[in-house]
Amino acid sequence: MTIRLPDLPYAYEALEPHVSATTLHFHHDKHHKGYVDKANGFLEDSPLKDKHIEDIVRGAYADGDQALFNNIAQVWNHTVYWHSMTPDGGGDPHGELAKKIAEDFGDAAKFRKKFKEVALDQFGSGYAWLAFDSKKLIIEKTPNAVTPLIEGKAVLLSCDVWEHAYYLDHQNRRDSYVDAFLNHLVNWHFAEERFGVCTSKGRTATFETVDV
Ligand code: MN3
Image 1 (spheres, rainbow, N blue to C red):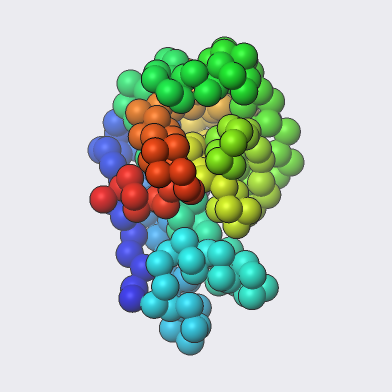
Image 2 (image 1 turned 45 degrees about the vertical axis):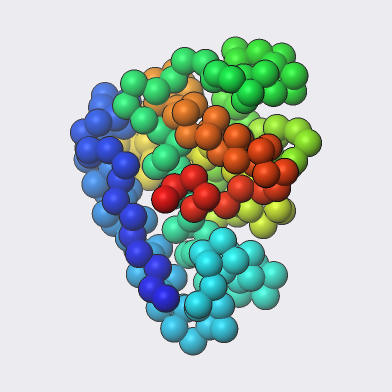
């Protein structure tokens, strides 16, 4: 099975002015594609090659196959990241996820404050995440390609804080980018849908459960 580069779920200019078409062309067409191509190269001789992408991510991590893990995890992380943003996003969550955010963080404003702190606290390249461990919502940061998927958590939102995600539009101001992500781009509908899948079936959602 060949890993494919998914299309962006919106037009390249759809997230402007917060994330520009230029950034998305580099980030999707060069960075994301680069991870897909390298992962396919490493998979050619791997016993994991016919597995589902999430099982490849977990398997490469468990096997200590750092080169495959870095690239396949970045393929998955970026796909979730594209879906974590939407034109005219932002605002507050609704429904059951809103209730759970109120329970675990206080309210949506407190969620945004904590998410921003965590995103700014990640030293160097990595991600900020909203994840669900089947009991609690968790805001966490990870370095480089590391993903909450390897800890068995369901990812609800991903915010790429590698400099390539924001440098052309916000230069060194990661705080400006994270504000734009939370206030104008975050795709609560996506997170609500994934949370619904996790809770209705009482298990960790896979990305494909929602994406196809
Ligand atoms: Mn990236």
